[in-house]
Length: 504
Image (cartoon, rainbow, N blue to C red; front, side, top):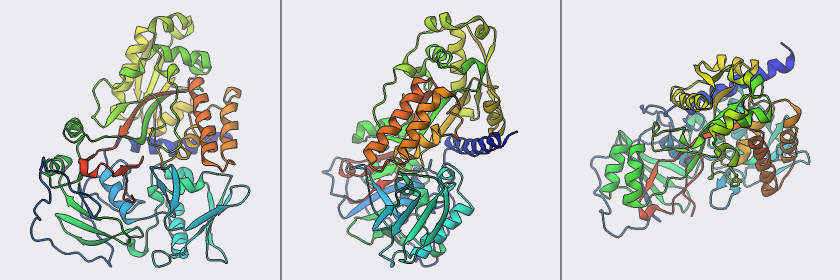
């Protein structure tokens, strides 16, 4: 195996570990050891609800009452991005150097008051002024720990691009990158890059006033409202408390989503968690655009879920969540087009005589694979669903031993900078190293040196559209968040990662 193949194999193995995480349901609740400087007190009795059902809702300017299930950890580098309970608490307690404003698609200061880059976008400098919250040396130490022991998941894509992080002579934090990345600041806004203080101390705008088995109270260090978290054993009990007027918002179980939409008018926007299938450009039968488009015609993308997945998983025509900053509405004519008769007419005798292999690595994707196999059968093709491990699927993809395979992505931050370069870049199994993919490579290279967000995002959207035109991607589903909100809390904005923005 040549050096190029070794690098590709190693990178796809990392990505496949990420994909396995996409199918998880989040961590099981367990006891949390709080930072040493946090005072833990017992709350003796339940405070009566401050509002009742069918009563005019009170403002949440002074306090917000949340119903959550206690996560296994609050530390941002340990939380499961699939567990919205953990994401919300971790985001309140810990800040990154910058943070995303979900209402304006811009970045704003967090631990860093300002930031800049060199002409090549390979050196990024962040000014830490409020050293009462965190010192520059603590930021450096935090990222050095992350780089030496990266969390599982999509953070590896960014951490692997950092060659060094240090404090310069002006006491600023400096990141050196292996190559240009004009979207680096957006990437650092991701929750899992939030800075953890000494002994796990919070660095965000909230501090733990008290915590017990029943309730955690968070006080803001600025004018943000107080947060009262009622710990519940599951989303069902949290939703029941919400219907009794005891909560302003709650992370509910998927089966409660329809009722919350009707009862409270709650909206459940999509998260940056997507699943899709890839038509393998390394397999002979799917190596050309024409061949892949024939398969697209044969597959009814809109019918893939077939009511088998929770209410929080919705059919999607794009892998770019609409909640991600920079996402354009993409014409899904190619992937949404379904015509089994036309498909059968386009398949040659060599394809019809071959058994099409559909590779899956998650149990819940096996059913989707079977739906694809049934569609292919309707178009006159025989096929088999092959459930394999991450490592085996990685080998099968690069050896061309599967024609279609399941894939997925959890964005490391809330802009498309955290999706398109990773999913379509040279280290991804989606992007073929052939001449027809040259436009993708050129667009990604140009985006990496384009400073203006809107201009860079336009290039990234174009790269994604080229991938669709080449027939490489078959979108299947996106996940939605599960934060039900009462009318009083409707102004709570949920970011693409599931966190809530308390700055209004």
